[in-house]
Image 1: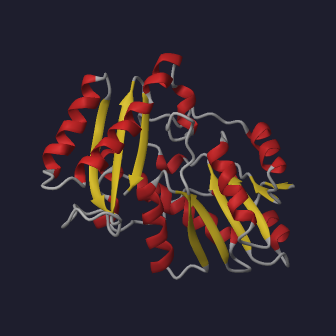
Image 2: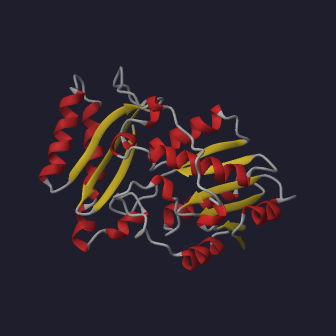
Length: 279
């Protein structure tokens, strides 16, 4: 595996190598990331991963400075799982001047849920993703793989790529879970031992909400409130637990199986976790 740090070196390394399959990450890799890399290997001629902790998507009170940076370990994992090229830019490489041009995503999709509780988050995500995609796919079209755990992010990025006619197909990678159902996340490492044992309650709450929503005569607002109250009683601080249409993340017009997704975000101690279940 080759590692490069500058955009010029990245483009030189990709020249003549065919169609890239790209997995963007912020590092501190776990099995979920590695599953995306394995998926990408079958989708292109050269498998590319990036590691960059993007300042633009962190709010002032969030964990940008403390976010785990484990580049050497991450590079070994990527090498072992068949990645061909690692792009690991420094901040000055990717943002050599202040990034005053930014992508404003569609507020109908981006200002709800995560965007409501983390204002400006999707502007930061779209800006860095657009820049990374322009770096990787400058010479040849290809595929980029994004994890479905970040469901709204996947939809926002997919819409951006479509509207800007980017030469890249955005592919979803399945959420990877621990044996008890907890969605794998770099932020799981912030959990204490007791919190880790409790963390599966978010997945259980979403599973219960999804099952109850398909029952005859379901009162969705009441079910969502009950799910929030249950998590609060277990010591969580939930931001949202809700059922939405998969197509546009709007409240559903009909509770029809195969068209819905239950999404949740909640803080357990000092750690904010997100998850979703399609049903």
